[in-house]
Length: 252
Image (cartoon, rainbow, N blue to C red; front, side, top):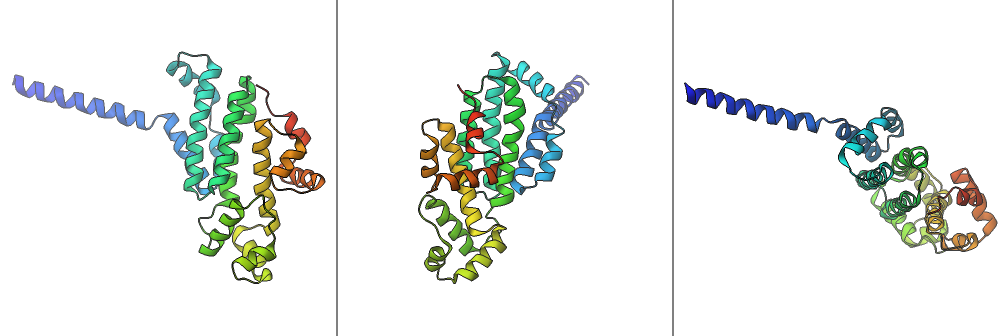
C-alpha cells in the first residue's frame, strides 16, 4: 500500500513538473517571439503589425525587472540586443541577403548602444526594428527568385559601390538589356536602378550611424557620384533628407 502511494506521488510530481515546463513553453514572451519571427521570415507586414499591437510594453518591463538586477534602461537595451539577433535570424530564414542583414543589425546595435532615453528606445527603436527586418524580407527576399536572378542580385550586392548599369549586368549574364529589365521587374518587383538605389541607401544609413564621415563622404562610400542625386534618392526612399536623418541619430 505504501509503495503504491509513493508511486502515485512520484507520478503526480512528474506530471506537475511537466505541466510547469509546458506552461513555460507557452509563456507570453515565447508566444510573442514566435509570432514576430514568423511574420518577419514570411515578410508578412500586415501580420507583423497585428502582432506588434498585442505587445504590452509594461508587461515586457515587468519581466525585465524580475529577471535582471540592473537598471531598467540597461535591461531593456540587453533585451533589444537579443531581439535584434533573433529578428536577424528570422529575416535570414526568409531569404534576405547577408549584406542587408549585416547593415540592419549593426545599425540597430549602434542605436541601442548610443541611446540614453528609455522613451526613445520604445518609440523609435523597439517596434521599428521588427518593421525593418520584415520590410527587407517583403521587398528583397530571394527565396522565390530564379537561380540566375539570385546570382544577379548577389553580384549587385557584392559590387554595390561600383558603377552598375543594366547594360553591363545584361552583358555579364548573356541577356538582352530589355529582357533583363523585364525579368528583373517581374521577379523583384522593382526596377533595376530602384533596387540598386535602395541597397545603396541602406549602406549610407549604416555609414551615417558610424559617425566618422561627412555627408559627401557617405554619398561617395555608398556608391553615389552626385551629392544632389544622393539627396534626392535618399529622401524618396526614407521620406527624410540626409540632413534630417542625421539630426535624428542619437548621440552617445
